[in-house]
Image (cartoon, rainbow, N blue to C red; front, side, top):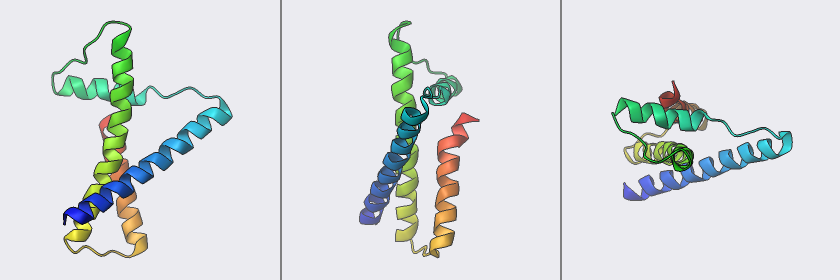
Length: 115
């Protein structure tokens, strides 16, 4: 079971890296700025748990940026790990069903907190 969890987490990390690379390539090609959505999400989640991200006017935005990026990584690795655990538990979907379920899980994990 641990092996499948780690394989799933590694697959999630690879998928997250590919998504980040595509995002940064798009930013470089089109000259578009970064999105503030990850930082906004961290701020909203901090409010839900009644926590405050510390820092002054210079350091706090940097912390929010770092935490925003880490939430995306955690969502991707976590979704991969969950898929690995599901496989270890005996779930053997077809490639199409596995792809659809994994995509939906990653969308919920990554975008759910943003709403």
